[in-house]
Amino acid sequence: DYTVIPNTRTIDNFILSLRKYFETDPKKPKHILSIRGVGYKFTA
Figure 1 (cartoon, rainbow, N blue to C red):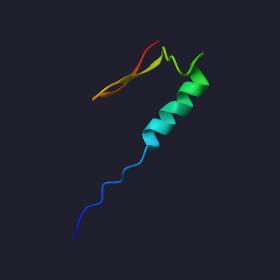
Figure 2 (tube, rainbow, N blue to C red):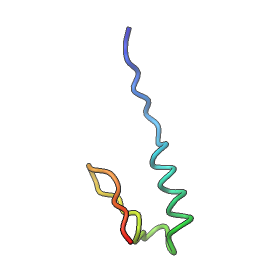
Figure 3 (cartoon, helix red, strand yellow):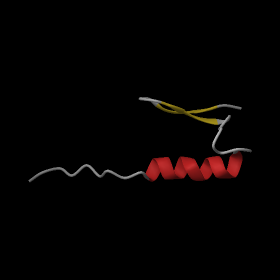
Figure 4 (tube, one colour):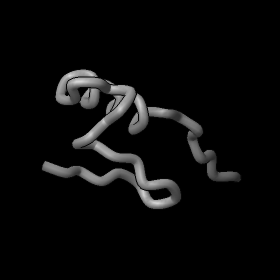
């Protein structure tokens, strides 16, 4: 038996869709920031 760790981009794709909805310019986000090695930071 072995454990399969799925290699999906589900969270990344969800964050992308949130950015498209909330950000004025999704390519230069101001509210949903990526913190490398940690995760995401939400700002007001």
